[in-house]
Image 1 (cartoon, helix red, strand yellow):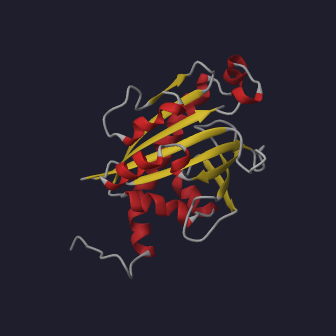
Image 2 (cartoon, rainbow, N blue to C red):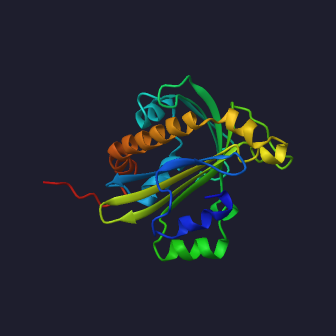
Length: 228
């Protein structure tokens, strides 16, 4: 599924690739991961990125792989526009520095179709962005980070939230003059497997503490139901 076909994520119907990785004709590596976040909601998921976890909280998110967390260009009340500067391993690989620039979902989906899907509950969370290598990756003249793309799309279910995570690694490389073989060398299939394992594990870890943390941060405005 090319990035241009990502509108399929607005429909809960199963995709041909829900979990796995594939090499696109352009050479771009597409990684898909579906995770069930039991007890979580889309509101909690989006709030986690507005909360902007520090290094200690980032390590909670993945105790084995995550190393450090910092934030740049952050704005109050939204994660959109902020840049998450992280260092992390991918399932045992050497640590990498990444810059994740969060963007509005309308950049990736038709605005009317996205809003309609959100209104009818087909989507309850959307965290989308651009991913560059290093803490100061290349940018376009208007400030967009060059590199890959990530799309985290959530849907509330009776047991929690179903999360679809899709990554497009090397998405900007064809426009920069790099051929398919160069992209494959930069992002080999083994990296796709490592990212898939990392993604599934980190969001499984997140689901274990996110509800409690969200309630603790909103206890004056959220009605808490205790089990006794």
